[in-house]
Image (cartoon, rainbow, N blue to C red; front, side, top):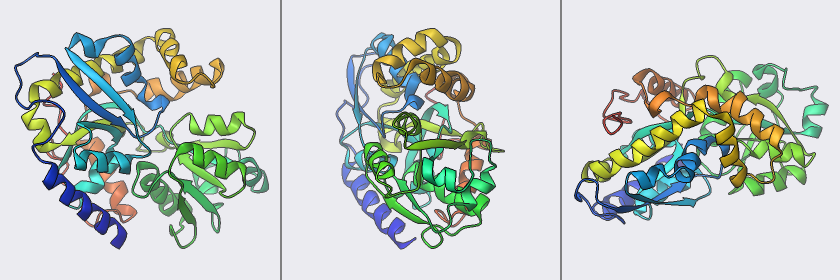
Length: 342
């Protein structure tokens, strides 16, 4: 884990130098117009609530000019937060927990979805190992021994969850029994899969659906359906604690808009689909509908609120695979808070 410590040390240094700087004014007049710069780790159906809030004007209702930028991974988003180039990140709860294990003061303020990651394999690998979506997670992960799997970036949510799955369900040692390669982006993962350079990857949709449409991949498992993981928040909005405290009114308004988006996604299938089609024009209607109704809607949290039990699970997952050495303090006010979500 020396690389993890080294990277997070750099982040901590950047956080200290970034404190006090942002694109919006601290302690501005309540309700005053403000622009916020937000980075999403990747373009994903998992961020349906955000796209809805933008399309329906929920941020405008809060006098927020919401600038959304797409990055490459959760790790990239955390670096952007550390440097002060964005105000908030839309990425994985696992990124926050890993950083917290090294003393990096990040905090989640609203959840927009549970674990949406899918284990995607090349059609050849699945066929050679007689694997289908009906196969058990133990069979799937065990079959990856000696194989190569892709991730977007080191310490990203897919990387952290993949390592957990390999250890827990495959009894395999990441980087020893399985080669894990960082490819930088979802398009790069798709290309590597098509070229036979990797045997699979783990990613939120529509990565695997794009591979299936190209005839190169097959979705074998949805991680959020595994025991104990169905209520864990994966997609969250987070920032530095000092930034949140000095921009409390602004944060409450951003959170309010996202919480409205959460509730819309949960209750309005057709309206949400119409909005998602604007972002995922290459995904056919039937696949997009199945992703929304079969994967996203069941795990969108009511009002975007979080619980300590959910964060306990995240801490345990990261401790099992070695990303953190001891259990994190998961009480509200540390890694997460509902204080801005009223």
